[in-house]
Image (cartoon, rainbow, N blue to C red):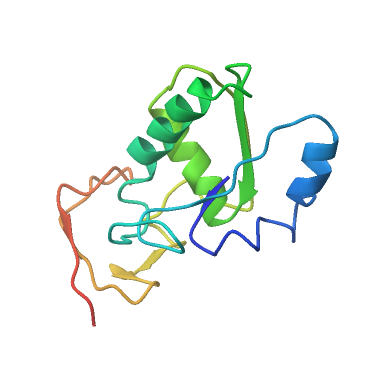
Length: 142
């Protein structure tokens, strides 16, 4: 699970606690996303989640305790980290279980009238009429 909320939370509101999964034979990894918790770098919501997620999956597969098959779970932001990682089609990602997340960040979930709910003020280029990706995104702190 990759999340910005701190590893202690670990999606225990909507899913079983990671200890439950561990007791049932799964290796569980809770990772702070870039720029949050103990993770270095700068936090910019969702910008690096696809690549960072795929790189995390590749790293997990190298671990001696891994059988090479990786699944992801979580809701809200953690749900979106799964969807974005899956877009990269990393080898070994065999299952995702996103819950209570959005399929489109730009229409009603994260951005409202082109302002990010996170307190960042992005300048977003035009998106196509079908809700496609914006052509350019930059941000500045308030």
